[in-house]
Image 1: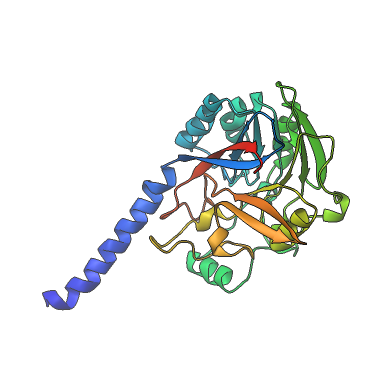
Image 2: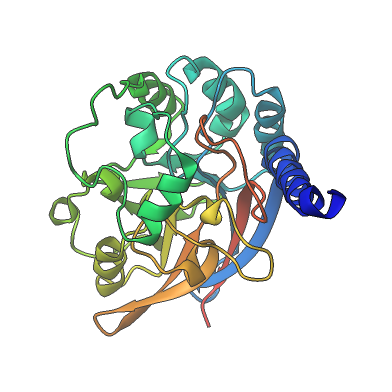
Length: 309
């Protein structure tokens, strides 16, 4: 009798322990990654860029708020927010409170689908199956029935008031306190087909010290366009680093058509005979209905831009 029920009970206990760890410990084990990217002109002083992504703020997430606030102590040269700040339509004040100290620095931002629409309760197993089989989110369809409108306008207004540059199908420039000029080209979220590359095409601005490309979801059509236009670095988020990964194997899905080998961190992309660096942030949050991360802790990244090789 013990042998008959011992193994199933052991498997159940192990599964429960993994769920408890993924939701109660790892999802709140915030990390800072540091990466160097050689993209600046020769002789230019290094620039420190803090990338924050996929905050997915829900009311009451005090530890996440405190951690985000503390990132201001890194004193970056500028901040890039790659979207999906919300996972609760009533969490705008808390998201802005968390990001408030970072908004004292120059910055730029794009939005993701979760800034525009609230999440829906879904079966996590179905989510993994759909993503593994190549089905990605709304993909340009009208919002699913019952989708909640998130008050993203409040985020936009606060970011703009702080002097952050909105890059949803737009270009912009930051003049840093040290005198350097950084140009940006950004797109609205490709995950829901709001990207309009034709409106911003044309490549880097030649009179800027460096030009960066920014987008929420790293779909291949967008990466190809930016790379063919000779942008040296593309910043993106969206993937959550796979969110539920297998130790010593990695991510099962990316939630877009990017391969799992580049689901997070620094890599390269080639298109049109050119090469660009790609940095995908694993983000620091989760959908409110799947508040778990496994073998993929939440993160922000401090990128140091250095002279190109």
